[in-house]
Image (tube, rainbow, N blue to C red; front, side, top):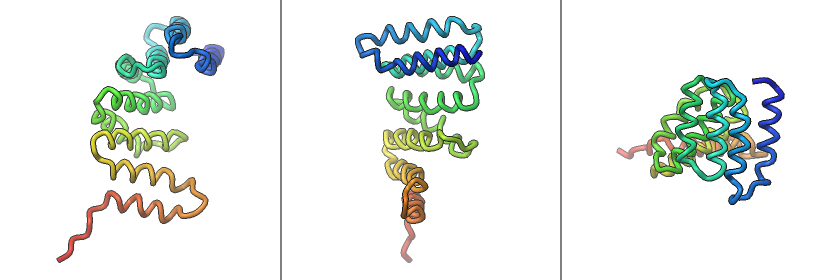
Length: 169
């Protein structure tokens, strides 16, 4: 879509806090109105609608829309956002294993500003599956480069959390 449409979507999202819970349907209608301007097969439509449902507390309604956006070819930055957000929603509806499966390949994908969000969301999914050590390792590994000191120590601790314990003979 053109920059004007993107700017209007950004403005709608900037106004999100103006819509308290009891006005959530109004916000979703605002997004639906913008989506109605898109071509029928655009992946941006279901993506923006998924975001609106998700942000207003309806992960169950968001998951199929994220899936549709990705199936229609949503890629790049917004595709990665869709995977992060869908994984979080899957976790919220009790399907954390699907979230892990969706996000794990992102660890080896091209790096961008969403890397830490991938790791944080994946850590939550892992924790929901009782795999807290793996989740903690991801979070510590993501945090380490941002620390003013102890980067190497924290990165080593993160790796140690998921390495097998040495066996005594």
